[in-house]
Amino acid sequence: MSVNAAEAPARLALPKTLDLAAAAPLKAELLARRGGPLELDGSEVQRMGGLAVQLLLSARATWAADGQPFRVAESSEAMREALSNLGATLAEESIG
View (cartoon, rainbow, N blue to C red):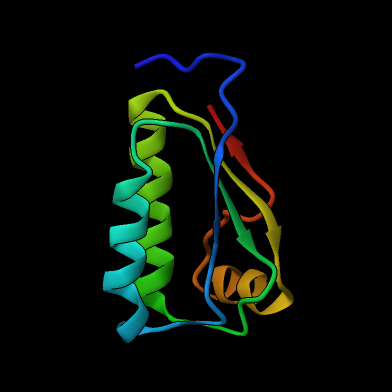
């Protein structure tokens, strides 16, 4: 699926706490935006667990497979640290 260059990305503000309880609602939010460009705002994230990291990495792969842009526009120090602790990279990236 190709994206129109003029199509503005949907913006999704991530919650302050990305734990087990936040995973299902986040998955639903991501799936609702599938098929178009997506920009995440993680500037308010204060705590992020491994499941949330896996979910965001999976979303990044899904958007790439769909040929759609996926970008983390902003990330908090806590978000960057959680990703780094698991050897993952996601912040400030653009895929697509």
